[in-house]
Length: 261
Length: 260
Image (cartoon, rainbow over all chains, first blue to last red; front, side):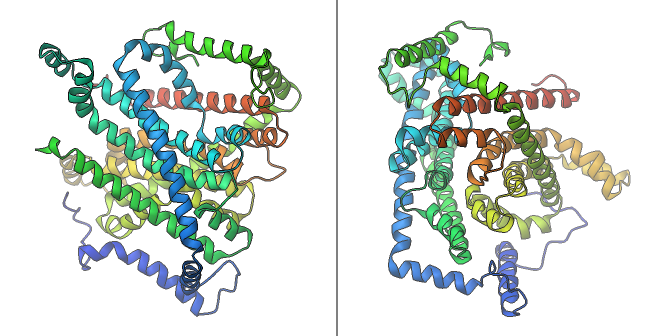
């Protein structure tokens, strides 16, 4: 860490608590604005109301149902997209010929913004779970593919030569040399894919509106002017995104720990 | 489409796959192997594209989307640079605001949609705000990072020369951090275009014009040809914006000398 410039003195608040100052202040102001009775807009609900509606949704089981549906969709799309991206990335990374033939096409497809696929997906697959998983899979595919490709391409030539000298077979070469060497790049791809997939899960629930999910909690709340449900949804989405990021980061550190030895 | 202009040498084999793909697509559609309601032929797409441009004011729609994109991008990146500078220069701000910012960053961009639409309605302001939020995050992160990486010795030199706060910012911090800031702006431009299409999908209104709105109309009318025309234009525009940003970045950073 760099030392602070002279004109700023670190706060007297203990470091671990400093990050909490602003959130606590915001919640306090939010509550104070409510308690003072000054703000009467129907769009303004108290923090307590949000907690109440959360408890209500938990009690009726609706929340678990929605959360479960979203997460299942997210994981299915993530698994499909990341696996496809990984496979294709390794394939194109290993074979010059395959890369030369397919890469320009894939590059052209990559340019099309992910949202632009929605109408086509909805025409082909409807508005149900299949369409959503296809959309999420597409979102997860690109980062996994791009990073795997560049990781495999970036494996030092010397390593491959040594493996050749040692008489490694093709499969051995891939499993023992190329994949481990490309692992950090692959992981940053998977990590991005996990985050994109969650983004896309929410997007798919907005755009392909059928069924249950956290996205539907938000859209329904918006339609019914239930600010408490909207805010609850926003908080939940943030927490899950945070959880995924932490999970992926931890997993990445764990699986590439041999590199730091 | 024409990656052949890049520095890489041209490889004709890259053209084979797309051509084969389009040919197969055309044959499959005209021979009736597929449901032509769901998969229209490339020729039909070309026709639809021509019709959209000549009769339905497609250029106007594209201009509306681009204007929105640009407005959101400028707003978001200016705010992003300002906030990034604040976080980068002030330990206080970083400690107090940083954690909240990083938590907010985790909130999927889409979660903002209901809030934005409740606050601003299905208006152009709402769309521009959404685009600005999308552009904001990458700029903050890269600006912060760029400022953090400014050489400490340069600060000391600035102190010796008695630079004022403003001078230090304009003469030292911003130029030194400009490579990272430009990277962030480049990313923001890509995100902003993505968000432009997203905003037209997620915050629709019947009187809205734009490429995304055209695609939605195609969807409602079950016109796959119009949808594909829209997708092509969205892709090409994104590509063009990206190239433009890259050129501009190379131009602006020419003072650094040849890379590596």
